[in-house]
Image (cartoon, rainbow, N blue to C red; front, side):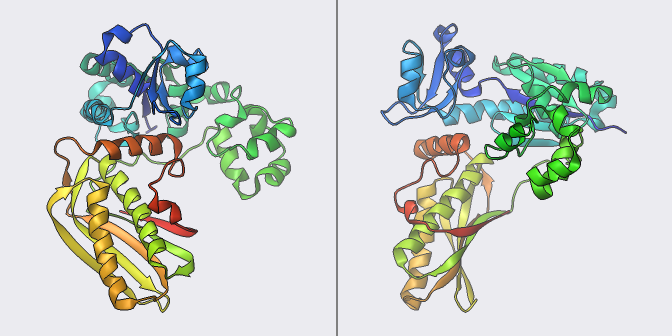
Length: 385
């Protein structure tokens, strides 16, 4: 049976929530982000985008382009609240929901067709339910795999509704710019364009030897995507029993400040995942492996579960200090931090953490970090469930 995959992407989600909550903004350009001198744009509605404003743009430039726009700081707790409403709608139609962020997800509705009708009927029902429940619009893409469904949801935004029949894949893909292929980045795209490969169709028809010279071992992967082939499954996220991150250092560390900086960076990564899954943690664990490959773990439970980075870091740092007091300047090869005894979040979390999560989600972990974590050096990170 052919798979039925839907990709739902909320239109200008953060800015749309602000317009919904403040009807007086209905006809205005709305820009969400840091409002200070060094702030950056986290989200812009379509009226603002028509003025040239886009995500990751310095706020000072945005103000020059759109001086009459409404500017506001992110309200992550509110956005998560609306996100929970949206994801609850997804789960009415299928348990196979793979959330990519607070405002988009893949759904495998193959097993729901007999109950709810065609993938197009389900997609329309989801779109209408979201509008009725939240007052917000979503773009919906439908196809037989994730790659095509994602491209379909992007093809006619905002309020897009595009379905890609299996016999129309080439007609859909071939005119698209080469940069729409997942994994074609800023370094690869110019090399392809220099060889006259401007569209997905041109790449699909290109000489395999040329593709191998340009793309190396990834040539086959990109050629499969250009043909509309994507075998990845929709992976429904299950509740984690624990969440952890660890780093293996390129060079052993023995300086206590550097180790604490690494610990903070790892704690921030762990707690972002905790908050993304709307959880709280009660038990904190650190893992230390020295230059002799001797590994120690130490744990401590909080009196009450928390989703605050500061709280968890204070506990983890205390555990590390205890280890350091006994091992002096012993070179450290690996450092890790994890949390367990997870439970659903209750109430609002830290506004500071929420703002940091928003900026990280939009621009990556290197755009903003706490002062101590800037001391972190080169490492090989591992994320664990």
